Amino acid sequence: MRLPGAIETFLTEVGRFFEILWRVVAWTPRPPYDPRELVRQMVKVGVDSLPVVLLTSLFTGAVMALQTFATLKRFHAESYVGSLVALSMVRELAPVIASLLIAGRCGSAMGAELGTMRVTEQIDALEVLATDPVHYLIVPRVWATVLMLPLLIVVGDAVGIAGGYLVSVVYFGANPVSYMENTFQFMDLGDVTSGLVKAAVFGLIIAVVGCQKGYFTSGGAEGVGRSTTRAVVLASIAILISDFFLTKVLY
Amino acid sequence: MTASPVKIRLEQVSKAFGAKVVLDRLDFEVASGDTVVVLGGSGTGKSVLLKHMIGLLRPDAGRVTVDGVDLASLGEREITTFRRRFGMAFQEGALFDSMTVFENVAFPLRRARRGRAEIEARVAECLASVHLEGAEGKMPAQLSGGMRRRVGFARAIALAPEILLFDEPTTGLDPVIKAVIDELIVELQEGLGSTAVVITHDLDSAFRIADRIALLHRGRIVAYAPPEEFRALDDARVQQFIRGLASGPLTD
Image 1 (cartoon, chains in turn blue, orange):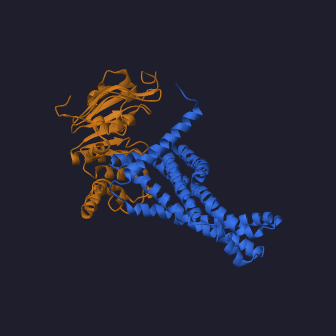
Image 2 (cartoon, chains in turn purple, cyan):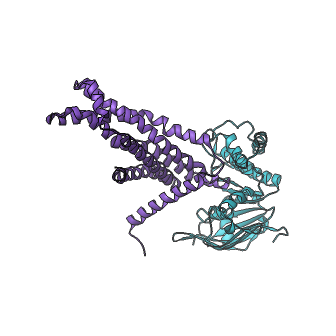
Image 3 (cartoon, each protein chain N blue to C red):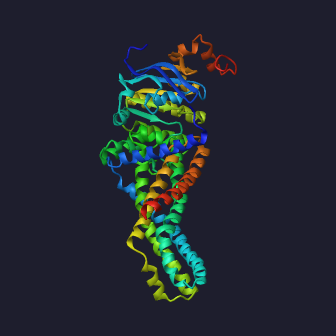
């Protein structure tokens, strides 16, 4: 029996996702370990993404303050802007927006890099040289992304809250002391950690999807282009869908 | 058949990609110490044949044995170790483009956990045998096509393999570099005393380097003989290939 094309494609992608994930888990404890490569990938994903995360988080926090200030003013509830900005940033906006950007930055890079290695036979060469390509290429990328995303999001949380503070205090003239008080009034540690758990899961999705699209590339330069685009699109969709379910489970 | 024992044997090997049958119950033997050239037009599955010999592809049916060991009987880890007996040179070199020439050639040695001093000595030796002394620090992107392939050769011979596989080593190179590469293949094969399988559609190369020549057509080996006999074979397909005719049994 043949399945309709779209369903078959969907099932193939899901199957490959779990195949790669499984091979990453299975190969992780096996030597030889390559800490230098892990650090190299962590720098690529973490340090190099920092400017983008800083900039987008700052403006997301600022826009949140602009929007909510105008709205809450109608109910004379502008004193709650701080809480609203902080909770939205920490629980939802910082992890999701930063992850989408990193999917575009790093997921695409992984798709392109591994895709090029596939079509130029470098992945075959690895196998011939007695090296498992999943172990050598994918394990460090996945771990680096899973470890670095929560760290980036912590920074994003802080910068987003700062953005909201700037707009409220400097632009709308809110009282700085009571704004800060209000920011942390309703927030507990669970709000922050659940955002970080989300970030780690999104990191896993970005890296596995990016590597998967690259690893299974076929069809030359055009194929690499297709893999790169698909890596970003699929990872972004997966992030948004899993965000719904994670939010449901975590709160 | 030659007196020397069989190194690589393919029995009734079939392989299809989707509906496209590439290898069709193919039988083939490579004798130990021989340099065998497999000829065939573009897209006849020469690379697929080569990738079966080293277990990069698994046959849908049939058996591939190397030194009497069935590749299908080896597990994931065993085949990894088994592959150290092989050196494979890829079409465009397939160098790791994030690494220098030195690191590329050192790669198999590092994976085999050789000592630092030994690695340095062996890399220098391998680069010397492909006439690329002093290229250690270059990146693959800085090299010409011919040089990239030679670095690929150096990487393939690093662990002094018993079997050398060459995938279209001279395709797309100018005639002089081609002759250089051909000489190099013979030098490397004789230097290591290994068995070599060369895939090509280049007749000049084939007659220069081969102990035996095979012709692959429609998923099977249709002719297999030493060069002079091969040239004289009374087979319409062989003659069409040798003369490069547009019409004949190969194109029907």
